[in-house]
Length: 161
Image 1 (cartoon, one colour):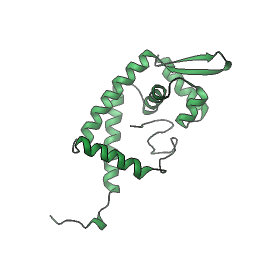
Image 2 (cartoon, rainbow, N blue to C red):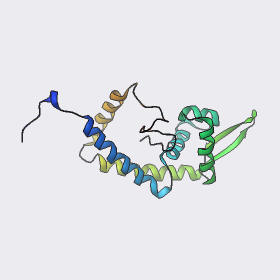
Image 3 (cartoon, rainbow, N blue to C red):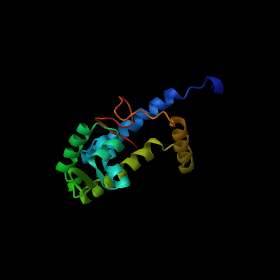
Image 4 (tube, rainbow, N blue to C red):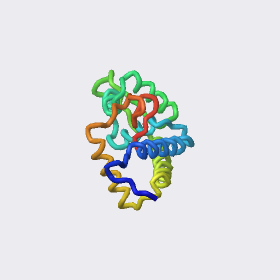
């Protein structure tokens, strides 16, 4: 087998292939819960950031407020979030992760972790840490806007894994 000189090695085709494998694994992991990537991302942000106004969540998710209302309606119908009026400003809604939302998020994160383990099985745990750090550095300042097609976080499907 002939070794390709480093100057002629191209990582983008490999990254594209890995992204496809990861996307399929993530979608399969979300399927049992009926969550879409954007649902998962919103639930995760509520856990990490705590309760939020709808407007604040719109800013965190980088979504148009009207899209956030639809997203929250879907999550509320499933009992995964709770919306209540802000006592300080009755025009504002506060959004919180419900106990069911916490449970669903835990289960989904477990499935996603197992899927990531499978996709990255060729790497040791230390190599995974290094790989993640390299990806963060490589994408610094280049992360796509959530609504962009093909982005990790999309208006229709959010996947921030």
